[in-house]
Image (cartoon, rainbow, N blue to C red; front, side):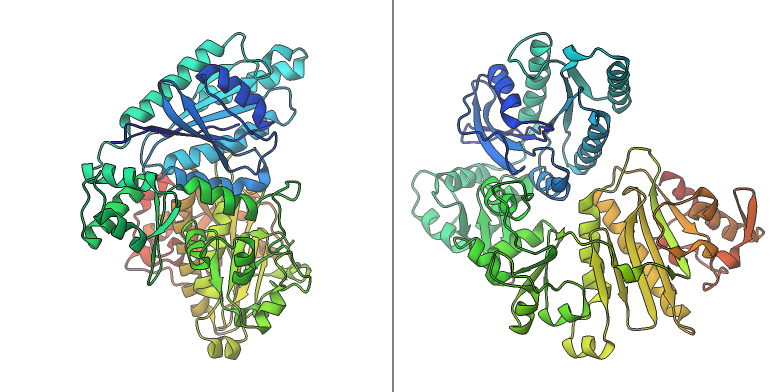
Length: 576
C-alpha cells in the first residue's frame, strides 16, 4: 500500500492533504486503521476499487484530506505513475507503502513499489516523505518468514525511509501510536511548506473556483461571473485571469488545459481522474472495466464521446495527451501498422471501421496488450545498443515505454503527409513491450524492453549503401530514449552498453556480460587515440569492428551517434 499526502495553505483557511494509497490488500482494512488514527469519517468505501478513486476525509487538526487508492495492481503501473506525477506537480507528498509480510511475494512487491515511489518522489518539485508499514508481523513464525522480515528490514535501512511494524488487521495494538506520530509529523511538514508563494489574487481565484458547482470551466465561464462578484477582489482583465490560473496550475491545485483555440479549467482533477482514467484503465476483473481498445490501443474519438457523454471530447483528448497517455493518430496510417482489429469493442467500433470512415483516432500504448509478432523472431541486426539498470531491483516502469513508444512512433515511424506515407509504404509493428518500423530510407529499427524490464534495447540494420542513414537515425533514437529516461524515471541508475555485432541475433531476451561493451570504455578508447581494442570477458575486439559504420576520428566526441547528440565529456559518464 502506498499513501501520498499533500497539504496546501490557502486563503480560504482550508488545508488540503492528498493521500494516495497503493494497496496490496483491501482498502477498507487500512481505512479502518486510518479512521482510528486520524479520527475521520469514511463512508461508501468499496472493498475493491479501480486504483485511482479519491475519497474525501476530514481530520480535526490536519484539515481536509483526499485519499487516492491505487489498489496495488500491476496492471495499473502506467496509470499509477501518470496520476501520481500529475498530483505531485507543485507539491510534495507523503507516501505510505503497506506490505503484508505473510505473502510470499512481499519482498518483490515492496521493491516494485519502492521503484515507483522513488521515481515519482525524485521528479516532485518539493520534498516527499515515505513511510513503510509492515503488517502481520505478529504471525511470523517459521525460518522463511523470519528471513523475509530481515530482508525487508535491510531494504528499509538501505533506502533510509521511515518504517513501522504493526498489525493492520486491528485498529489498535503495538506500534499504532508511533505510526500516528510519524504520519502527523509528515502531514504537518507538507502543510507548512505548501502554497506559500501564491499571491492574494491566487487565493481569491481558488476560492471562487471552489464555490462553482461546475468542475470543468472554460475561460469565458470564469471571466464573466468574476466581474460581478462582490465577495472577492479579482482582476477583470482576461489575460491577468489567465495568468492567475496558470499560477494555480503550477501548484497542482487545478489543471489548465489548452488547445489551439480553447482553454479549460479543471477545478478538481480527482473527479476527472476517477471518471475517465478509472474507467479507461480498469483491469478486466473490475466492475468499471470497459473494452474500449480491443487490445490494440486504438480508441475512436466517437467511442470516447459515447463513453463519456458529459465531457467535451476535445477537452478529454487534451487532458489525456497532457498526461502523455495517448496521441491522436491519422486513420490513414493504420494500414501501415498491426493496430487493426475486426472485433467490435464495447464502444461499437473496430479499428478497421474507423479507418474506412476516416474518423479521429487515439492511440493508447497502455491499452495495447498484444505479444511480440511471430515474424519478428529469427532476425539478425547490424547494430545493438541498450540502456541497462545497474541496481538489482530497479526496472523501467511501464509508463516509461508507453511514453517512449508515443514519441518514437510520431517522430520517426509515421510521416505527416498521407501521400508521402503511401509512397514510402512504411510498416510499423507495436506490441506490449516493443516497437519495430522501417524508416523508408533503407533502415529498420527495433526498440524493446527486455531482461525483466531492466533493459531498453535498440537494434538496427540497413540495406547496402544506407549505413549513413542508419548512423543518423540511431543518433536520434538514442537521444529520444535518453530524453524520456531523464523525464520519466530519473531515479534509476543506468549504464549504456553496445552489443557485440556478432551477438545480434534476435530475440535478445537477456543480456550476457561477455557480449556487451560499456559505452564509457568505448569513449575512453576513442579519445585516447592509442587504444585500438576493447577488452571484455578475457577477449578483445577492434573498435572499428564494434562500430563499423561510423568514423571514430572525431573533432568533437559529442558527434558520436551513441551519445544521441548530447554535449557530454567522458568524465561526465561516471555519473550515469
